[in-house]
Length: 154
Image (cartoon, rainbow, N blue to C red; front, side, top):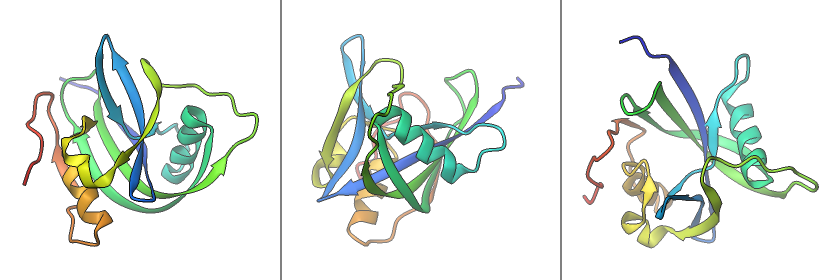
């Protein structure tokens, strides 16, 4: 099977012990994802994450460092590679016009201390975000996450 590879730049935004996440309602199934999306041709990843956060949330961020890489090899029409950047929240963009994801119904600030039990996807990120937040060793490359993978409850 020949499926295209799609890079997706994601923003890890943490403030006051909470993670900013986009809330998705897919026919009553509510879950969270990090803001971000597909990299465009001739666009740097750091520019892509800034653009996506502005489009989805009307916020300005500064990407600080690439902290996680996770793949979605199956389940979509493309092979997804999520590149997650730790970002500093600068503030709101006045007059921004939002272009949210399909089924996006808002956003929430999720408590990092209880993140392992929250429906944040990809789920393999939950434990690693907690470790990063606490200054513990964390894994950068998380490999592939398939639909139906169990949550990481190490």
